[in-house]
Image 1 (cartoon, one colour):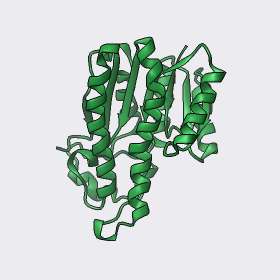
Image 2 (cartoon, rainbow, N blue to C red):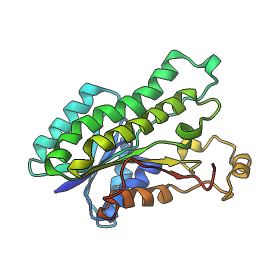
Image 3 (cartoon, one colour):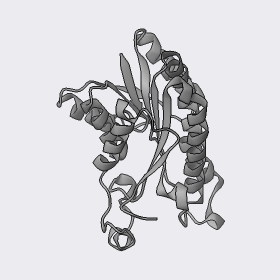
Length: 241
């Protein structure tokens, strides 16, 4: 059986993606780092709609933890493999560059960039062997145009965008697609402290997006209908250019 793994799947966009993929019939692996209660709530929401989900806690920035968790999962699922990977885990620690601390730089890059590398490398082998796979990286408007106060976050997401384009070329012949989705301002816990009223004035659509709107795009990219789309970065931001 083909499973979908969503990193950072317990809340916000990650939760919406888990629910969307489960609605398409995929059993979903909900990864989280520490918030078990939120992950359990995501699992409950999936199961009450008839979907299948399981939890797999690990810190994507910890190579050994990634390897151990995914090795254990593979041992427990000898007839299954992860055919859809959504690299969604990420954090923001905003500050102007002059005030940016070392740990703020490293923590943000470790989760978004190194996490992408550690997890993707681990699951890619089976996708290539099975000649079937979908890798979808959740990046950001910040990685495309930069945002003041987000030098670390912009650097991390821009790096994943470049990696997306390179990896897509490496694996396309094996029928594995690699794409990135770049949300703008989406109404989640991560954006709760932002001044929504002011920021809405900068968005042509005049509102923040919904996590479910991002999830719908991810669901399409994970489907067979998107088999000829690879190496792309698709913005979903209400018209910000």
